[in-house]
Image (tube, rainbow, N blue to C red; front, side):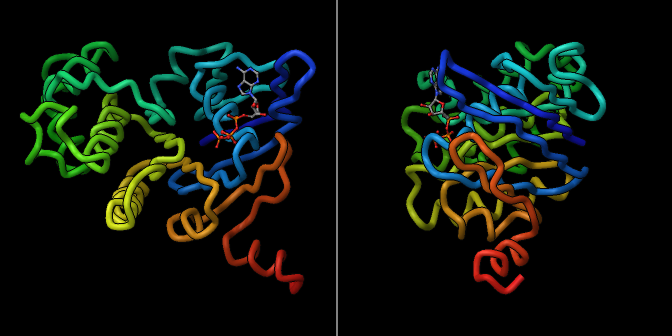
Length: 226
Ligand code: ATP
């Protein structure tokens, strides 16, 4: 579903992502694990077509994000680290607005809005102003907007940062739900977080791939028993 081929991103003399190669199979929940500054957001921003690569390619379901941006972007839903929520709108108004911006037609819009609100369980707050919602609900609204356009791939950049333990468990459950119908990429700097929901994990450090495997194999590898 996703092929990252020899991807490199340089900012001047600083290399943020270095010769990264990765394949994500359809239906996988795939974790990007690494400390702050490892290159997770940079990789995600390139995968979503928000940032140009210095070298290398990213293909989404066979479509090159640089050569066929419209086809590739149509397959992706993205929750950035700081989603641009309009705080003075209600979730219903905001999601309607995002659907329109994404070019979703009126009939499909109704269906997609209702599915996005159902999956993220925000129907009960859909008419309240976003600024009055808890952080957990704001994040659900962010995830709901990523589902508009019926993407095959959902990319979530550190979706649990700043949430309390209960909200974190709820967002994890939601990510597992998303994994039933989408290929999901989840970034985090917390091992237990990706371990809890991901079938595969890549560990990235200073822009370089350190390892990519199942959570169990990675645990054995780092325990020295593999
Ligand atoms: P975090 O968890 O803190 O978001 P990350 O793993 O997502 O970390 P990135 O944000 O991708 O890491 O950053 C990778 C490296 O690239 C860091 O050293 C960062 O300082 C650098 N970097 C990111 N954006 C820019 C930019 N616009 N200009 C220069 N350097 C940048």
